[in-house]
Image (tube, rainbow, N blue to C red; front, side, top):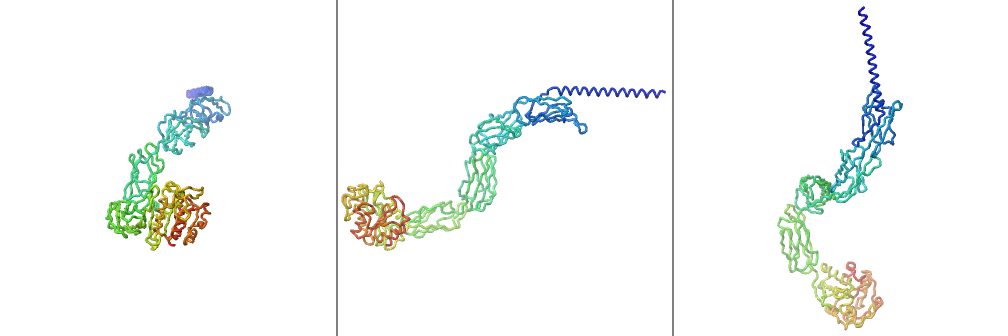
Length: 638
């Protein structure tokens, strides 16, 4: 009996406990539902943070996957997290996160979300959007680097937006670092030492940017080389082991290359920087008689400045000592002279024993970088040969293995005479070449405005100074380039007495008053024949020489005339054919348009039967010697 009673009591107790647990569970569920109702019905305020791409708040939601996101124009996407799941079903979320979907404006926005079933009330969030972080460009002071990132402080961390820098119509990205942005300046490719207005813009997810700051900045002044061991076109005579470059500020980085340009090979070097000095050390000595290119690229100073442009020096190494200059030309040396020969580098060997001279008796002396050859009593037109044998050794140890030689000639001018003077005392010179008994006389500059006639005779003199050895043995050449030095000095046709010298000779038709292209010139022929010292000097020279032929140069018109004595017409036509000039022989007055009296060529023919030709050059002041050189030699050989 007793055991049965015990069993009944135990069952009742169990049933009572079951009811208690059930009531507790329902009570808890009720409380939870009440809490959820309160949570759903209340408006939740969320303070947006720029420090991350989304802002999260604690919020219990039942079946969160059933909630719809707000419309796109609300500017936010919502994500639920801290999930409670049973099997594959998400029953609750305990945190809601808001991610902006467009560039935000300061202020407030309300977002309401509700489940698809609508069983529970919607939940409303109030999103407070603060002012975005400010870019403190006003804190920038002093010049900025064109290659280093520009650091700009923000008033707060910004994990939402993207930043760009604008300058000189170019744009570059900025990287966010904590509460600052670092903007790439190098890709803007700005010039150094120049003002640039810059602009900082902010955008969200590639959208339309907005300007957040502007400022004008000045870029750093370029780094400069103040001392360079190698400059462009330099010749290196010694055997350096290193090259030093000094800059106007300390250097922290550089890129250097050395190339042998003869075969485009790279020369091994090492580079070190210490303060403002760059040292380039050669792995081995440079090849001799070779060409090189040294480049300094990407030199960066400690302050962030760079070279304005790459430094490029093309240089070469020398061989042994060579001649760099000779003090004389190839002809026209005086009969006594000291010739100076400069060497391109100092020598250590005994130079004089390697030097030889032929053609004249000479003394030879030398210093470290100069050779002097002195002679006296040379004959006109003497060829002088100077030679330096191979073996010159420099103080740097390089040896010249190639011989050197030089040829020159003493002046071929036999003599220079002053045959008279002008009205104002200027000398009139005659230059003599050759020693033959037959003379060819050349004259120019009888009219002062016809400078081309004087120029061609001066060029003829310069040429004969070095080439008169070509004159036939039986000939002599005499040249008078400036018969009218006063007229040439003042660029006037007549002399200082306003006399046309070529109308002052005692030809049969001499007149005091002469005809000109502009009418009668009273006294233009002189007060009497040979009244002018210049005409008298030329007449006396002509009388003393009694030339085989006289050739005078005037201007202008590209014409040939002749005095028609002896074979002058034949000679004149020959000269004209050689230079392509038109003949006016026998028609000079018709060609010129006025009568010609007291002319030099007419007087010479009348008095001595000397053939004379007259050349009218194309212009008053041109240089025509080269075109006439062949014809001049033909006159010598008539």
